[in-house]
Image (tube, rainbow, N blue to C red):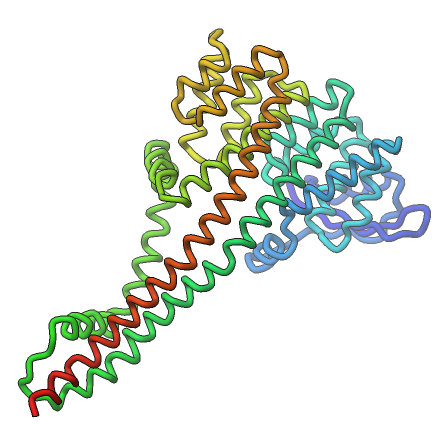
Length: 404
């Protein structure tokens, strides 16, 4: 299939742009005319490597765009607007983002052709996510698409707000740490070698061990500094290849979860996202086993991925939900207790929503704790580094002057 760009006008005289996957140009022309548009131009899409990269970077459809789109679509449909009209309005509003425009235009074309929205979104699962597409399908099958869209919008808005808080809290520590590393490299590669030239006139005077150690590190970095980017560049593909193996991913993610403070934050973030998604899927009418399998892909962590798949397998065999969660040994006690309560009361989706809100708040507290711990730690490291440099540079001079 080849992508064709087209430009047309509707009967109100408004310009309409879009992209259609087709085997030939004539099919594109007929498709545009069948949609009630006046075709002005059609051309085959030819993007080089640079063009593809620019499109992905500049026109990327992120979490915030998906959340806004879902909220607007839910509002329109709850107001009684037909799905095709809502998609048409949203498409026209997204002309400044060609990627989003293409998605909405293709979905509009599919819906007008008789396809359900969930089916149209399948090819864009990488943008919206498996849970999103599955929820839309379930909402259409159950005749509650408007309700599902509203819940999806709330879920995405909460997720976007949480991600923004985490990123905002981590900006200062990241900038300071990067600055410290840059200063340390400059000192070792440029400044220290020049200072060490002062000791060349000392003759056979024995330098302190701390100064000799610093000189050895500085000399090594000055001569072999180019090895650092080479090692990093070589480690990236090796790490990517290893990430394709489940055992490697499991061990890597297990280690990450054990990192002090940061590991706890990652765990709470994963629990908040996965449990919120599980609640949303159950509310949409998706079966528990299917919902658990979908959530395993949302976790983005092999430890919890395997845990949710194990729970799905046990539930399918007839085991209770609460015992299945407890059997994995990966979930905090509060999760097991709340799942047991939800199972007993028949309100598992509502209970899971409360649990996700709990972990969202806990994750926010962990972010604050992490930033609070990083600031004094940075000051301590800076103090030790400065003290080390002062002692290493000034001690030989002090020893030399004390001999006279």
